[in-house]
Length: 246
Ligand code: NDP
Image (cartoon, rainbow, N blue to C red):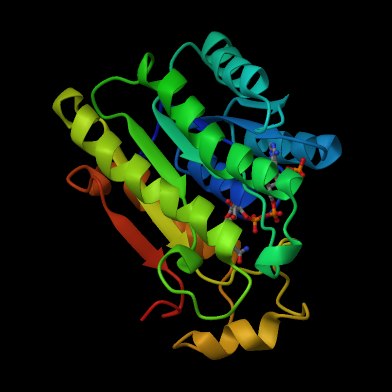
């Protein structure tokens, strides 16, 4: 019997990158997995096909995390389809990096709505469905822990907000047997931050290991927190960042 057999997970932003790897890993571990996406309908459908090929139920829901009605509805749809909810991974995020004077009000609204408001709203909606053993796993960033280079004011601010969400919710939900944790990825090779991108060499230089991580590195940390091995871990921030914040 796989570790997450009979459990249901929701991964926001599961069509590409880290979210895709997380969705597939949770399915490998036995969970039925619902994922949200914004634009990549085909990629999301392919992830669902791969979840089904693993013998699990899969569901893709188009839901812009910036839209509070849509994110809540996606969660309720997942619960309606699969009948329960055990693991929530707040992964969908946008990275807007740039000189502070050049960030527009629209940038500020978008980043805060997607990276901060949506994890709050999804967690809030999830709490009604999560029982003993429930898990909320937030995806932060090593930039919340260390301002290694200029341009991160808005993005780092949004990711730092997840620290307060994580610790406070861990305190509030602990008595119900629900854990809440935060993973801070370092530079991970995805569309958002390609290993060959213009800022890649700079970022590698700030890690201790000297190279990028893979989406699977984050997925393994999520799997640890989601499974029984993570049952006594709550309110924690786990860096999976190659030593970026060291
Ligand atoms: P990608 O840009 O490669 O993938 C983003 C995923 O999130 C896609 O599935 C995308 O859907 C979805 N998404 C983005 N915006 C929205 C939205 N408004 N509503 C719904 N879904 C959305 O990003 P990564 O995989 O690299 O990043 C995942 C998380 O990890 C983010 O929170 C990011 O901030 C964080 N992170 C990433 C790091 C890195 O180096 N890659 C480092 C530190 C943190 P669609 O395909 O439809 O666009």
